[in-house]
Amino acid sequence: MHKSILSWTLIIASFLLLQCSSDESEQQNKTQKSDQASETGIALKYSTPDEWVQEKPSSSMRKAQYRWPGVDGAEDAEMAVFFFPGAGGSVKMNLNRWYGQFKQPDGGSTAAKAEEKTIDVDGLDVTVVYVTGTFLKSKSMMMGGPKEEKKNYAMLAAIVETEKAPWFLKATGPQKTIDHWRPEFQEFVKTFHF
Image (tube, rainbow, N blue to C red; front, side):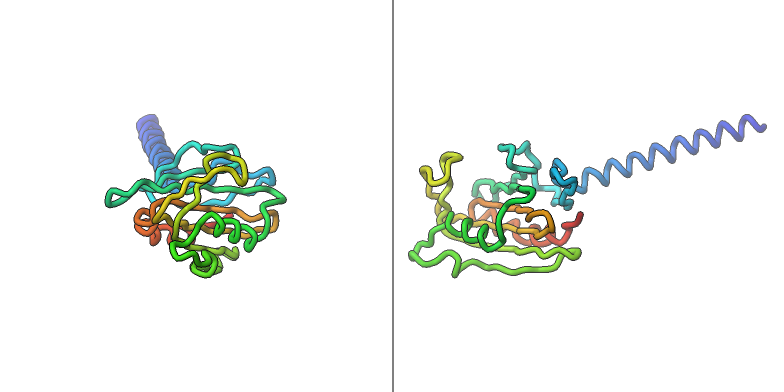
């Protein structure tokens, strides 16, 4: 009788352990985070929508990279995550650089037309920006190199300020695709934490 109770206890314990492992694995799949901790040992964590496709970063400068599926015949958009420990520049400096990657059909200022706001997320200052226009996509890694003009494009980005350096999360793509994923991006930003 004692052996029978012990056997059943082991079977139930094994089942519960397997169930817990399965639940943890499922939770880890739902919670995406930057692929690597930074050199400072701090990694920004976040949860992404299931529909965003995580890809291998196309550059060693990227901590993570995601593809947002296109809609209504539009191409996919791409979101990259960057962190430069001890560097990266100020929020304003980066926003101005990003605005310089767009030109407006009427020749006006991209910065003047950008939608920009700073919010508090889990005690972090996060600047979220949305801009549209013609995207001047670089054809090479060199600054000031040749550009390809992509009309009706948009950028949706977030800059997370930390003591070490900012984290940058920047998506660019056809405006239709960016606009489609904009509500999900706004919810995604709310999941930022360390």
